[in-house]
Length: 487
Ligand SMILES: Cc1cc2nc3c(=O)[nH]c(=O)nc-3n(C[C@H](O)[C@H](O)[C@H](O)COP(=O)(O)OP(=O)(O)OC[C@H]3O[C@@H](n4cnc5c(N)ncnc54)[C@H](O)[C@@H]3O)c2cc1C
Image 1 (cartoon, protein in one colour):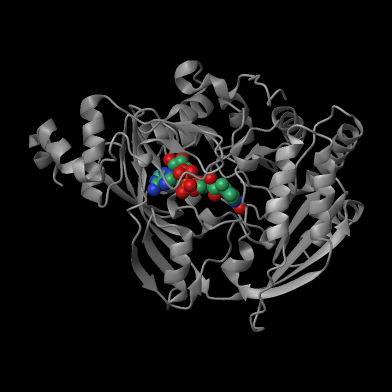
Image 2 (cartoon, helix red, strand yellow):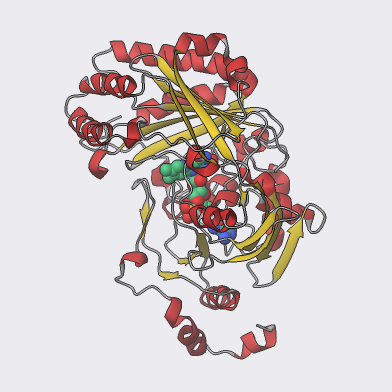
C-alpha cells in the first residue's frame, strides 16, 4: 500500500480493515501462553494478518496509537520472548510456500509456516531441511529469530541455511536482505529476536530428501567424559541424553543412508507406560521428592537397550517433548564441555545424596553445532556444545527448578557459555557485550531500523537494553516463593 493511501485512511478505516484479522477480546487466542506453560500474557489486541498489506496497517495503527507491536510465531519459546501487553501480531496465517526450486535446492516460504507443514511441501519435491531441532512445531520465522539449532559438529544453527529475507521494518517499509544486499540487516536478523523487523518471507537452502539411520546406545557417563570428542564426531548428527539418577547416557548417532525405512516405536516417550507412568510419578514426586530418583531410574531403564531405526530425516531429528516444562539451555565452547559436565555431575551427585537436595528431571540433553558468523548466534565463532535441562510440570503443575537451574547457569557462565535466546536467562547488556563481539552492531542496526522501539517487548528491553522495573518484567529476575516452588 502506498504511503499516500495509508496517510488518507482514518482510524476507523484502519479498524474496519483489520477487524477480520483481530482476535475477539474474550477468545482463546486473545490470551497468550507459551507451549511450556511457563509464561503468559494478555496483549491489548491480537492480530492474525493474512497478507502483507494487513501487516503494514497494523504497524500504522500502532504508530498512530503509540503502541508497540510484538511479532509472535506459534509461542514455543520457553520464556517471555514473544510476550507483550500491547499489540501482538501472530504470523500463523502468513504460512504459504511461495516458490520451490528443485534445481538450485531452495524454497521461499512465508515466515509463519510451521516446520511440519514445510517438511510436507518439501517432500512433495523430494527436498528436505538439512538439520532440525527436537521438534517441528515452530514457525520458520521463530526458528530463525532465535538461531534454533539441531545437532552435528559439522552442522551450524538453522539460520545459516537462510539465503535471503524479506522484512517489513517498523515504519512499514519493505527490505530484502542477504549476505550481499543490506548485509548488516541480514546478519542481525538471522538471530533478530523479533526486534529488527517482521520477517515476511524466507529463502532457505535445502537439500535432496534423505533418510537417517539412527543408532541409540546406552553408555556410562564416565565413558562420555573419557571419549567426548570422539563420540561427538562419531556420526553426522550426534546427541546425548544423560539420566543423572543412573549416571548413564543414551548416545544417539544418525547418518544419512539409502537403507529402507525401519521405524521403531519403542523409545521411552513413545511408550504408553513411559508417558503416563512417568507423568504420574513426577506428579507424586512434587510431594515426595525422593521418589524422583526412582522415577529417573525407571526412565533410564526404559531406554537401556540398543535401538536402530531408519526413517525420513525429520522423523529421526524430532523427538516427542511431551510435558509442559521449565527449561534452560546454554551453548558452551565444545573445548570446555568435558570440564563443565564434570562439574555438573559433581553437583548432581552431591544433591542426590542430600535428603533435601535438588532432584533433576531427565534427560539432560547434550548436542553440538558448528561455529557460525551470525551476530547473536550463541555458536558465533565457536564449535559449540549445547547443554539443556528440563524440569517437567506434570499435568501443568509447578515443580521446583530455580536452585537447580541457577547451579547449572553458574557452571555454564564459568565456562564462557551463552544462553539460548528463546529460553529464560538473566543476562543483560553488560554480559552480552563481552560474550558477543557484534552485540554493539546488533544494537546499532536495531536502533537504525526501529528508532522508536516499536518492535521491542519487555524481554528485548530488559536483556538487550538493560531496562529495569515492573514494566519490563522484573519478576523474571525475582526470587519467587510459593508453596510448591521454594527452590
Ligand atoms: C518442546 C520444544 C522443543 C524445542 N527444541 C529446540 C531445539 O531442539 N533447538 C533449539 O534451538 N530450540 C528449540 N526450541 C526453541 C524453539 O525453537 C524457539 O523457541 C522458536 O523460536 C520457537 O518458534 P515459535 O514459532 O514458537 O516462535 P515464538 O516463540 O512465537 O517467537 C520466538 C521469537 O521469534 C520472533 N519471531 C517469530 N516470527 C517472526 C517473524 N516472522 N519475524 C520476526 N520475528 C519473528 C518473535 O518475535 C520472538 O522473538 C524448542 C522449544 C520447545 C517448546
